[in-house]
Length: 562
Image 1 (cartoon, rainbow, N blue to C red):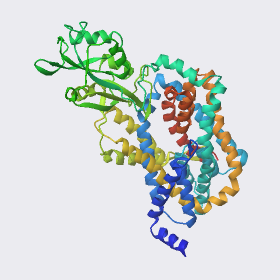
Image 2: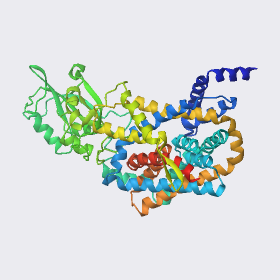
Image 3: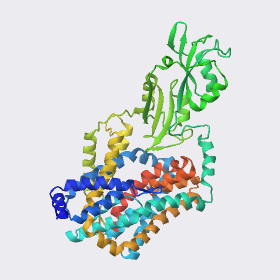
Image 4: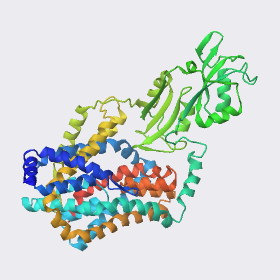
């Protein structure tokens, strides 16, 4: 009686079944065994399959809407980096990612042929083993276009879900283990030692704490001018002396006998003046060595607004510079770069060249910070407003270009509406980086489109596939799991070898590029943990952008091939 009531409730209100699946699925995804968790997507999928045992019907339009939002947002996010990768300095990593992705497709196709899999099983194997959840949607769209009977079509889409569920866990945990534990051994290196060597080149040392969490990057201190070395000196002369030592230390305010004033370059210090100094934490020790005088702890001296602002890089004058060079050549007095981010990942700063779409975090006096934003790009001010005109027409145009079908060797090939949305997301994301006056999607909204869009789609797929899931497990469970191990590891092994012997990347870059090409976020986390460094991320960002695009497209390709 109780189960019948639940079935009748969700049959009448299927939207509630979707939200139940999301809530429970996200909770399941957070459960950790050691340091491993299955993640939200797999948690929602498995929960959806369980809820789907009630045999609930949910309109396929729901999953289509959310999947299109997900793909558009994914393209929007990686668009600037994807376009940069197509330029000369990014081409080696683009080619590397393409080889790894093609190897993954070939491995999945070969395994499917050997085991006699149908297109749904082959697509599920590819999706889970290569950890690309978007393949579920693209492959499902491709299966819908095969002209099959409704029952056969539903069964085949169920196989996609089954294959993904069986192979995803090793696809994620296995890739993370292989790259972090076995990868350094295959490359014949000690990863932490190799990263330390490269850190000296890219400017991340134990003294240079430009990359840190829970760390106060810049500090402000007040001192009484007592040291004869400073008395009579101009503000500019003192700052230039430190600049010659590669240190950005600034006198921001001076309290004289006449009161507190903002420091000007030509002002001379007098005995008894109080100066407010701005500097980085790592430079403070150097400054203290040459004591200006007694330090004061008076809150009134520091009553001036300090702003921390994220700025998206778009200026041609800045692209190609390093944050270190930008700091010394273009930033105003008292303004510092505290972090560099690319696709949400923090990078070493000193010798990493800036790309269009990178985000640098600047901090300093508010008026000064605001005055230099246009030299760099545009400010990513915190806002909740999304340009839905941009999103709406972007998805519409993408869907329209994806509808036409071409026949190659008698096989119907189409981008599908999902593939079109992905491509339009790439284009619109790139255009936004060129012309930041339109098309704003705040980071929070991108997260919702990306994560909730995908998990809602997966929830509906899981619920719809639920009735056929158990029979699918019985039919291909063990063989699918074993095949998934090989499909996960073969591209990674190929990537390690070509990275070392053909592209001759630094070992840390090779490992990061393997994780990016296979779009395994868990792997880059495991690699940086073993490396005790963020250096491997330098190989992750371009390859991650390329991998997302190619692996998603493979969902339609493998259906066509099988």
